[in-house]
Amino acid sequence: MNTAWLSRWWWRHWSHRGPVAATLYPLSLAYAGLAEYNRMRLEEIRRNTRLPLKAVIVVGNLTVGGSGKTPMTDWLARRLTEAGYRPGIVSRGYGRRGEAGQAVHPDSDPAEVGDEPVLLARRTRLPVQVDRDRVRGARALADRGADVVIADDGMQHHRLPRDLTVLMVDGRRGLGNGLCLPAGPLREPKAARARADFVVRTGGEAGADEIPMQLVPASRLRRVDGSDETMRPRLLGGREVHAVAGIADPERFFSMLEQRGIYVIRHPFPDHHRFRARDLAFDDDLPVLMTEKDAVKCRSFAQSRHWYWPVAASLPATFEPALLQRLRTSIRLRHLG
Image (cartoon, rainbow, N blue to C red; front, side, top):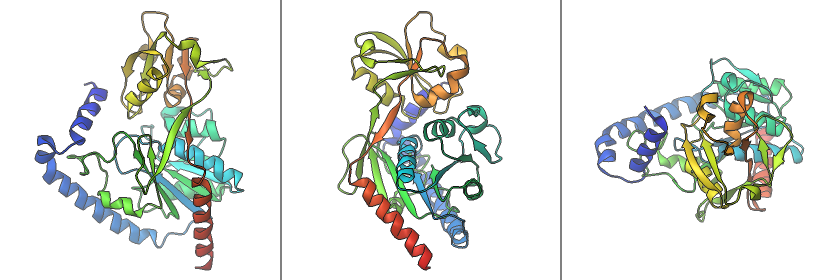
């Protein structure tokens, strides 16, 4: 079954409250009830959990699929480092083999630790840990010298103590029809939005209580094989390329290329797809472009025509001081308590 097509089919129905949502609504109510029960049960445990850290910052979302969590985690890690903290990053490592916790390094195998953790380790050069148990992973990062832990996709890991929560919202999809799985895309009831300290919208028009974030492409493309060779995007203007994307919303990547005058042959894959050389074997010599997240999985079999285009989070200048002030307040209150 083409799971990329299936994901697009679900999102078409999750974008409104039509017949599919009505049919699945009883299951959605049951899911929401179980999610809320699980949250309250685990939050009771969380109140008695202590970590040897100054703070924990959770970056998460309410919907299935991507919303800019990894670029935000990268942005936070860099700003915290500049502010004098020693951040570490904990992630479940979605799609990896095995459940045991382990340290992630820039040269780790994405199949063993997950694609996004490897990307973050390469970008930040900071301690990164994958663990299904995020509390255990945070303790491991403290042992590795971190004093602040960023939990990538940790909003639904309710046993993990947190001092700040940054909720990410996809600017194109939003919260869909506002219903929980399977009638809608929500992983917990939308009332959970009120628990966030900051709500960041990736792309689109931000609401009055939201912070806008844009994903800005780098000035140069890089070779997937890890060499130092780069290419200016303007060299591809007016040319046809194969565009490969195994992310939650491939259309975002394809549209970015087309907005820059590149003619795109689309090749969408499921999020976290485990690429093989045959997935990139096209019967021509056209350039092949992909996201940085996909590039970490293709490096071992990449050819000279395979390129990736890094993107970075861009946020309003007022966001950084507001976040750091909120963090300092939380640390001070914890110390007083």
